[in-house]
Length: 110
Length: 117
Image (cartoon, rainbow over all chains, first blue to last red; front, side, top):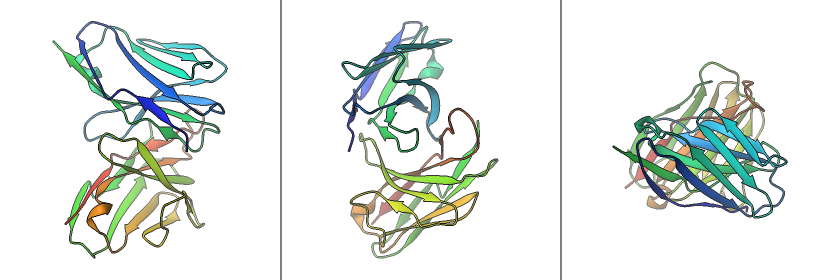
């Protein structure tokens, strides 16, 4: 199956920017996603990007895609304590079956 | 966004028993539901895809007789782990789509923690 890899942990100071990185192997990936999971809740779609884009910005979130290197990143500006969660990177060829990374646990410290 | 619930949120059972996990779409009709399994520090692994009224499609390596999936209505899918063993202990997550949203977004349930003793 397709491999999606991301680092497991990230600690960031409140107010700083967080950058979560992800790499994938499937060159047929058309859709790339970032999901957020808070304790006791289901994964929530934060944002997504099509493979023909290289950047997408949505308020405090910026997604960068380097298709050549198969590298996806999520930047959270002005990180807040409410941003503490597990962030999953995912990719799909057809917006139907998704392949997920293992999730990055982001801890925001005061 | 749309809401997907799972019941129970956690379950402990004895080896050899069967366990049923429910996945419900609360405010939309889910034409497709997905079942995932997640081990600690690992990614969500898709187990099967089910469309309402038809048989589930299982991913390679997933035993269909072990993990019975029923999607009898547009708001309910069930996963039954039959004759559970300790190696079936895991976190099971469902998702549902069909409620509109961005590109037919999948909405995820909060997961069910299964522990088999």
